[in-house]
Length: 139
Image 1 (spheres, rainbow, N blue to C red):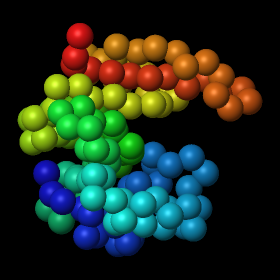
Image 2 (image 1 turned 30 degrees about the horizontal axis):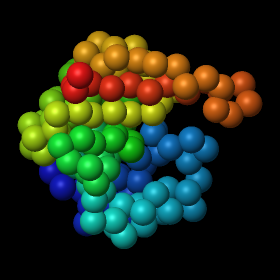
Image 3 (image 1 turned 90 degrees about the vertical axis):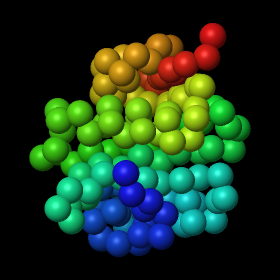
């Protein structure tokens, strides 16, 4: 895993981040990058192989040993190879997390369930869009 916080404005980082941002205009991606840069508690790390960025995970670590996943993305060509699972496991270990959670949509629920997260519907937070809270650890 590599630290991406200093590389947030690079094309490959923004392009990968776009997979985890709704309606990802360049303006919106730059706003997300700026949010990470301004925050002492937010971290963006990723997986790179042969100089190619394959995945990234953003975390809010303000309440250690608990964390919230703010963004997670794996390049479509690299999906199904365990990169997302690796990033989650590394984050849990690297930051000594006891609980990690994420708000997501229906398309990502299966991934989180397969990683041992419990899933709870948050209902329709936006017109026609059901959101979910996924959490692992604790209890």
